[in-house]
Structure formats: C-alpha cells, structure tokens
Length: 320
Image (cartoon, rainbow, N blue to C red; front, side, top):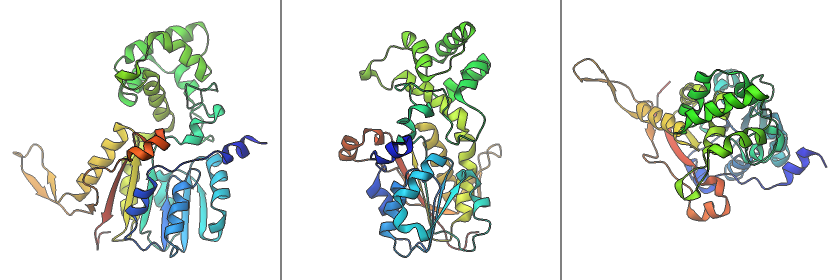
C-alpha cells in the first residue's frame, strides 16, 4: 500500500465543522472558494449543505493533499476545479472567473496529514527530514534554515514566529551543534534541543512546539502573505458574500483580527494629527466580534482543534 493510500485511509477531521457550516448558512453560493482545501473535509461539508453550488474552486499548495481531496470529493467532481497554488494568488486564480464568489474559507496552518507524515518533517515527535514545505516544489527547507542561516536570523524566527521566551538558548544550542555536523532530521533537531528545554505539561506549550512552529512559518512565509491574501479575498467577494478564517496561533489570529476590525471600521486613525480620526468607507461587517472556538466535546474528539479560532466577515453591498 502506498503512503498516499495509507494517509488517505486515516480519518482527517475538519476543525469546527458545525461552526463552518453555520458561517455560510445565510449565503447562496453559486461559486465557493476553499483556499486551503487539505483533505477536503470542509469542502465536503460545504458541498453537502449547498446544493446550489455550480462551481467550487478547491485550492491547495500541497499536491499530496489535493490527491487525497480529489478522492474524498469524487461525488462532486463535475462541480470542482482543483488548483495547485497558494491562496495568496487568489486574484490571479480568479482572473478568468466571471462570477464573484459568495463564500471563501481559509483554514490556516499545518494540516493533520502533514503532521502525521514522517517524510514531511513537520513534527518533532516523528523522525523525518527537516523539510516543512507545504508546497514541495518550493526550494527553501527547514534544513537549510537550521544549518545555514545566521544567528540573528534564527533568533528572529524563534522569537517572533515561535514566540519562544528562551530563543537565545535555542539559537546558541543549534549554532554549536551544527559546527560539529549538519542537523538533517526532525529527531536530530529535537535531540539537540531537548536537554535544554525540559517540558512541564502543567506550564504550557512544549518549547519544541514553538520552535518548530517558528521554523514552519519561516519556511512557508505564512505571515507575510496573510494580510495581502485577506485584502484580495475581500476584493474578490460579491457584496453580501462571506469570508471565514480559521487560525491556530496568536500571530495568525492577531493579523486576521486587526485586518477585519480595520476593514469594518468607518474611521481611520490619523496618528500624528492631534489624535484626530478621519472618516473612511468600511468594506465589511463583522459577523463574529469575538472569535468562535471549538466546543469541549470537539476537543475531546480532536485535540488538535483546541487552539483553533474562527472569525467571519460579510462584504458590504456596493463595495468594489
């Protein structure tokens, strides 16, 4: 049995399924966009609940994920266009599409099947190459970052992207270890760091989780593309259409929260002009003023959902 078949047979639970369905309950969706299709869990829910969909564009930068999604979404194949791309390019992807979408979903972060596949190198609890590329056609890997990037650059990754308080220890440890021999696998990196980062589950997240998070964000340029992608998604939506975004850590959620609030505000700060606020046209209305979170029952079934947050906005009418 191939690795694709093995992975396809494992259950892939879409996060916050009921909340995602409810996010688009009030929308008629002749065209729907899933910018992060993954194994197709959310797509299946949307397609089941919106028989009016005439065209469904399923985007993912991971070709492995798209193969699984094609199998899982086979009953709706005539409606679906599968696109190997990054949602940051949504404007280009939709350039030849005449209908504006009334629903767009972004489920950010790393997927369960990426974490569960040793060869992808996303998890320190599995032994695989230090890869971490969501799009394996891209050249930059975590191995290159760990073994060639400067002390200053590694510090920035662990401090800003990983939000690890002891980032200096991580950097010094890696710099010392790589002088002896290159660090090529997830296990090798975990073995280098573990003696310096003892984890007490009662005191929060495992530091290795934060360090690996920082590496993954750097490899895939996740934060740099997010705000532009949000802007392009709002621009692409039809008036009355909705954008729903699921985040998994505070860095992503802060970007989404601030962008949505700014887009919904009718005033713009004129910092430096005596504290005055200038009027501006809002482009969206907030459907969720506070993010939705998984229920305790869902977390029991799917522990990886515990940090998820869902925010939803609706595009105002006559906004271009």
